[in-house]
Image (cartoon, rainbow, N blue to C red; front, side, top):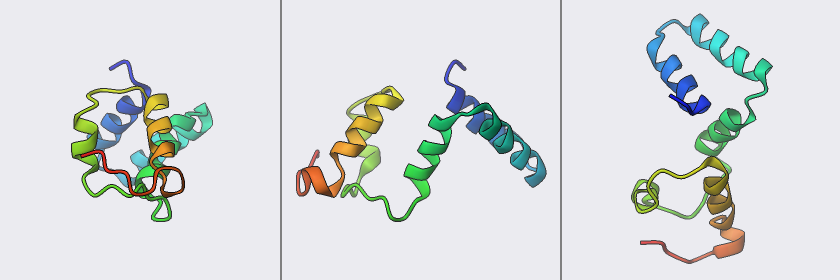
Length: 88
């Protein structure tokens, strides 16, 4: 796996212990893996919305994309900039 975020997620899935998972996340924080934490914030922050009902379908059209490109897409999809535009 060349993607560090994919590696972290895979490692978290491999361990069932809460303490192991905390150690993995702490190691990422100490390593400065901001991409991983930005991704978590985009996924779990209920105050961030993009106005899409079928995000999985929208991203299926794009295939595998770089994180920077995904961030640009999500910023553009914020309700402030492209409100009401449907990608489907």
